[in-house]
Image (cartoon, rainbow, N blue to C red; front, side, top):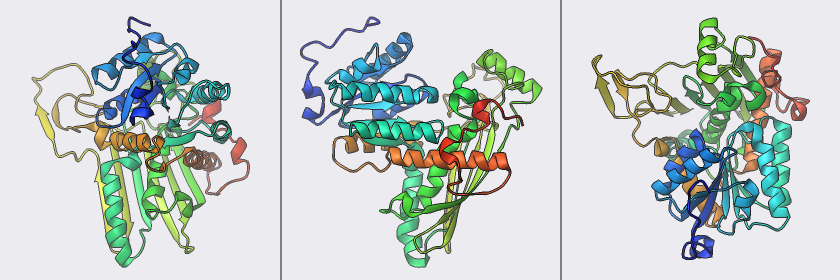
Length: 430
């Protein structure tokens, strides 16, 4: 297919899969996120990327070619999800397609397995698990039908500074002076790469649905005692705010339309480009602890900025991904094409700029993929499952509900399971 030779007799068979201790992985999706995962797999043992499906055959072929060039495995494009799932060399799927295809993709995976075709050991899904609670519950129910081990792909919880900082806070500060009581997280950049992200009806909302899934989970993760499930920290109240600060302004709406195409018109069909959320939790002793998170598509700086803080009675930690330890300077005479060779969502090509060396590691993709490969091989229990993804979607929908009502809501609010945000119905106007 697409000029890619099929695996020959010496290349096929279970010796490539778990029979040899290596997980054969297939990707659904071939875009920006999938390619970040492919870069991360360079540092992951016990796995081979063997397949890619995309609705666009050319894109699937391109991603498979990248996997081969990275020496990740004898990857090839597949004509359908069912064909890839049925291949005995494929042991697990990394689901990285667009939000609007999530339920349909999982239905095809589960239907193939239910018909006795394929022997998957695991299914990993990128954030968010779905666009709303009803869809997320459908995804969870589907995988339960066939008994699949699941992994919810939340890279920021696996980012080395987050993981190490959390470990130090809890083993030193919290053990001696009491649990942490406030966590903050933020993800900010100038906007997504693909047109579907900007369309509320397709994506399920704006920046809150797209990126708050990261930050809401990170604050809860930081505040949860290691070794305990995140459910041990109960959500009691949610306060959400959304706004369109930049991209619905006439000059920027026109610019966005020129860049993303005629289907993206923020003058008539805006989504939020800024969101904040306050989460009130109750711990096992009945104490209140707080999580605060901010996400933005209207941030202008060097590029993507991830940050997190954790504070307790006598200690604190802080992380900012742009405090990278490496900077470069280019004068006005250095004029080149726009790119993202210094940092994701890069906003400039001259001046003094930070460089994030090894973004796949810094942002947590390497550790995340290493963990879920081990989980699907049965070497450890998955730290995040589809149930965790469902919990995140519930929090996001409660935040939208709060923003629409203009007040804090008790959690879970009545009607949450059937709720669809105004942004996703193209009924929201800033």
